[in-house]
Length: 274
Ligand code: SF4
Image (cartoon, rainbow, N blue to C red; front, side, top):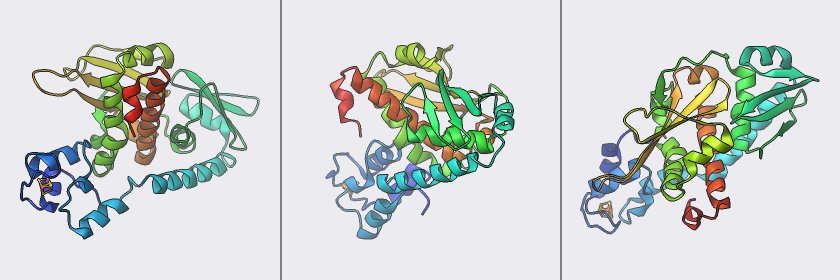
């Protein structure tokens, strides 16, 4: 079942009694918090059982998501054995030597051989391994155009955007809120580049999780009673160089990596991020 496309769609599913049992002043405020990924719809005790079941079945179900990811990863590894790795390297801007294809993921070497065996200078997060292999098997290798789009503006991104917010933008925002060195570390450790602020953000950093699939993270500091916000942008060629599912996986993988980075640096607040 498709995810709600806006807060009003969520509001229509609620009891609309403004009883405040969810901790929000109104059902509309609660719907907005759910849409932004700050609350789960199951937090409303008056939700009818059918709606509750519908949302617990959704793809945010972690084991189901991971099962699908692992199945697709196995398919891609098998596919790597059937493609011409040297030709793939030329198409996507990778190096090829000694039957191994290597490209930079966040500035570090990431390789695969013709049997699908992965090796890397960084921890191999399966959420990042999946887009890496998809990029090699199916990516068109188009050069970066320099026009930034949000996830929901990419082909087939609109329907998946609420889940992308939950798995990528919200966790990244929580890390950025509690781990003040995040953006410096993205530049120092992952080869990111701080760029002139975009979309009137306070901080904008561009990273290259794949050579021709840059992402830009924009962060707005809290101001005048408004809380901080964070959005991730992609080049407008991203959906030609990667399928939307792989772009989602890339965002979720980066969020996980940066959460771990924050935890390693001992920021206890970040430990509560799930
Ligand atoms: S608990 Fe449910 S019905 Fe009550 S205010 Fe919150 S969303 Fe509305």
